[in-house]
Length: 311
Image (cartoon, helix red, strand yellow):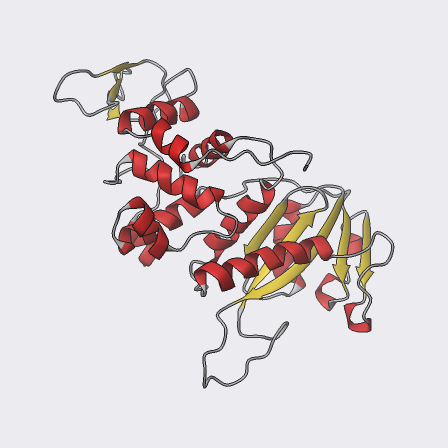
């Protein structure tokens, strides 16, 4: 039995717990506001709730004279201006975060009960809430890059694989036994990847890579830098390997092949963030509600209008 078994709430139990907008709103308020509701416009905690038959559910007003604006808990979050009921939002978050590889918009629309356009938009906003944030990787950190794109169709000319391919590159850093950071990049040159490393890695990190030339100067910036020579069929030398990073790459590729089939470079980053969220929470002993709360809390400040997504 695994040390930290993944505790998954059944779909029936989840839908029963969040079957109304009122229950969903109360849970969202407890996650975002904790025990102290505050104005999203000025930050004041001096607010009061507006009641009455004509008042919108959860409507409040700031008591500060210079603000005095009305709001609900969804203002300033990814839920702002959404016409979709919160119970459908919660169901979609459950379906995407609890699957092992992801969920296509086509399946999501059938399970949640929306149009394809709404499901596609909904899925991207949820992935936006799965951003890993500013996690700093320490200890042994493996670096690697992978390339994402659809498989060639019948009749298409052969495509180059690996470095030099026309597919979109994804740069990956995995703390061995810990979390992963990954992002899309324009190319795999050192000067392109170094700014990401500056944000992701602690200076005392022990960096593991293959022999790719872009990594050759990493020893100047981090405590240690070890390499394995994949070109010489060398994959593990003592503790030196990048197998963990390649395992993450494989999970991302399985999502492409098994679920999404194609990820456009424009939206690829959000699919990468979804894969990171799934990896970072794979051994977490938190229950389903813990993962739900994590996604909901990440929705603050991440409003994504449809026009911005499709521009």
